[in-house]
Image (tube, rainbow, N blue to C red; front, side):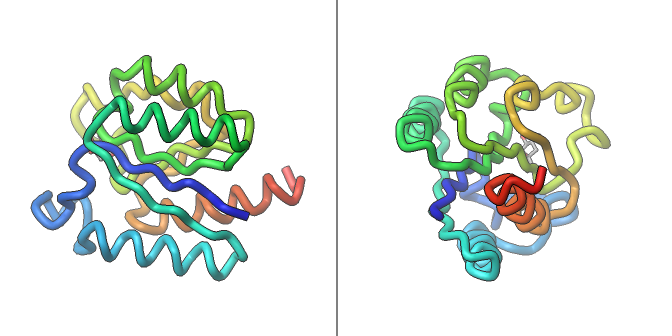
Length: 146
Ligand code: DQA
């Protein structure tokens, strides 16, 4: 089963971001980790990153049309993009929101997610393991465990 793993703005430049918040992996390293974690669960991860709201929306439409499960780290879009929220709401396969950091322990503007309300769940604060835990959750949802 294919899973779309979508990453929003600036996650492509993890190499430049604060490693105390985002850890030591660059985006290529994070992608490798996600693909390997998917392999262990029999899930094929198509990992993508975009700084463009338009492109993220088109990928969510693709997931909606193809009924593909989604893991999404919307990055800063999390906090204000109603357009991405509405696109995520069109996906009727499992959709899990993830964050490397724990936005609730950071600046106040990060405490709001406009995406959480249309996700099956949110996993935040575990670094790359947030993605691995989301894959485990998706595997469970696909098996009908939950
Ligand atoms: C993030 C948290 C967001 O607040 C931030 O804008 C990001 C990354 C995370 O993965 O911790 O770009 O989504």
